[in-house]
Structure formats: structure tokens, C-alpha cells
Length: 185
Image 1 (cartoon, one colour):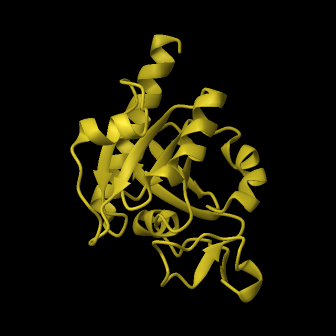
Image 2 (tube, helix red, strand yellow):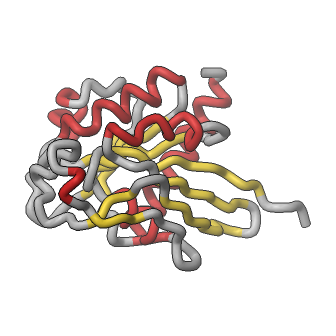
């Protein structure tokens, strides 16, 4: 039997979009997180509009492992969402096969920095709409236009709390990255 293929995937997006939850939903063991309490020192630095109840934030990364089958193991690296931590994104993305850009339709503009980051570096990515209970639902064409997504970038929906929908997003990303590699993109 051959050793399984290890695949690094980055989970990115704005502050409070559900990246830590997404990573944790499919972790085989307790995920490594770097959650820290929001403090008065972050007032004015972190925009908590739309996520006023959030009390912690990722300050470095989240990490989890997920075995898909005997041939494929995924290593998930969740980025911090605040722009003051974006300097870490290049290191987190190095060696990845692709990324998931997680978005919240209540704050779609928060997705632009992540989309731009992966487009600028030529890293394959998918956009996953995290279906928050109180968030508006929009047709794919409206979201694609609002995010200025290229036609070949997959746009999918998920509930970051549910492992089955997270796995579906990850499979879509791996398929997209493989298709781009075979096409020579």
C-alpha cells in the first residue's frame, strides 16, 4: 500500500465568518486553535459590526487533520480574519493546493481581501457561503456578481457547523485544484 497523499488547504475569510467552526467541524481530534478573548485594546482595530456577540478571535491560525480515505489526508489551516494579522497569510498559504474563502452574506465585502489574495497569487480557491441562521439567502448569480467572481471559481454553500457540508466544500476545492493543475493553469 502506498503512503497517503497529504494535502494542505487554507481556510480564509473575514473576521467572524466561521473559519474556526469550519475547521473544527471536520477535525479528527481536537483542533489546534489560537483563540484569544477580544479585549478593550482591540476596540477601534477590529470591526465587530454584524458579529457583536463574538467574544474571541483567532490570533495566529487554526489547524486540523481530516483523513478522507486511505489515499488522501487533508491538513486544514484557518487564517486569522482581522487585517492586522494578514501578514501571516503568505506563510499559511505556502505549499497549499488551494483555499476556501468563507463568506457571510451579512458582510460580503469582508470576502474581497481573501479573494484578492488568492487571485493575486494564482492559488486555486472556492468561495463557500456560510449559511448563518439570520443571514439573507441570495441566488448564485447575484452573489457571483457582487463578489466579482470569475466564472470558473466554484461558489458553494455550507453550514460551517456541519461536517458533511464542510467535507463537500473541501472535495469541491480538491477537484477544482486538480482540474486547474491538469489544464496547466
